[in-house]
Length: 494
Image 1 (cartoon, one colour):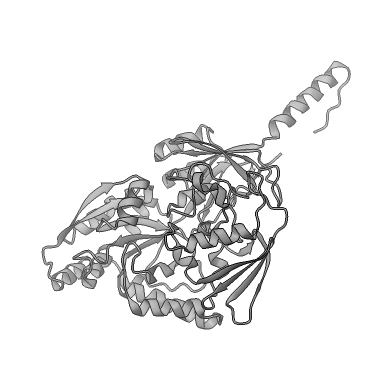
Image 2 (tube, one colour; image 1 turned 120 degrees about the horizontal axis):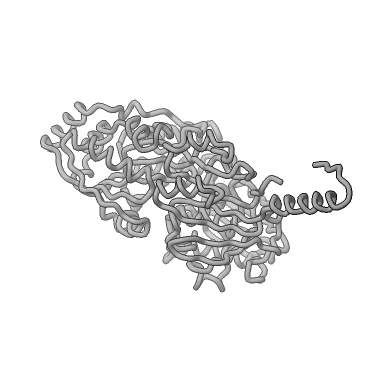
């Protein structure tokens, strides 16, 4: 900007320019999201909202996911893998400190991994660590992890939010006062309203460009629209009212990013609860579902139909939607063959997200058309985790599994949908030990086909991830290779 003035006019112009510069040098951000975390320990809960706030921002792991889904170095700057694929020797970055000022060392890595795999571990993804035989401290910056058998997913697993590194002295208060190593420090949590973070001035890596971050929790889609339109929030990640996106796209104040996720949205079925323990009943339910009607009605067209628990953007994906195509007459026939010509009653327990609440009403209507009546219960997130995920007290539920590449949950008989198939378990064991890319790809395709053929769950759609933000914000993730709102590279345009 150039001024050509004299006298007092020049002084005024310079003052104006300075004030503009100050206004543009914005370093705070308010980010809204629909779900509030039940607590702030990513290593002891299945709630993705915890990672949405804390992943990379506050907590870090040995490895980390990039915005394109690649696995990159994290707290480990490098690693060596033994010839037999069983031993990983990690070299840690030097100068890393926890937010309380203590050094992060190999002892903390050992503590974190041993805690995650312990018999009494509360880690929601304990299976990620089941193959670890031992964790040894070589020196303060070197740790050796030995596996019981080679696992081609190990570095991938260490990038999950469930595998972040924590310090033993902070565990007692971690659920309300998380202490990590990330570019931001936890500042405050006003439950029911917001979580505040502040820039970590002693961060070991590239410093954050934002000074302060506020996460606001707005569950109602109408309120979400109003908060963005009034510019009360600077960004809304996972915007819950897709019907409003065209209005934001037409407004130059905003940018709209519609990305892909790892979120397989499913009608989960309790495979041990009669009559859902009958494969014909599950198949009948699968054929009663009109996926496109759910995508159009609940998501306003945003979402990709899926026929198995695998992300369509993955190169190993197989389109198996034809194995459970919409065919209500076939559903009725299958129910009759299963001994339920007049249908039956079951529960449908719905967590808070819009895809579940809106989709649940549509699915209930589709099931009613084939004689299945559902008792709908709307649960808050903590209730859903307690009743459905932990307690397995449900018939049907709708949830989006946002963990990356998580088909391995079907090899866990104690997982909440309680699918117990030794054939699949053996198949997945082969997948984890196979290092040849072509052979592994073939095995992954077999795994997709197996769970689709068994109609373990009703496979609905891959969740789209819309973000509405101030047009001046740079560096927001478009896609969600893991559930995260990584703000470490976010800034305002000058």
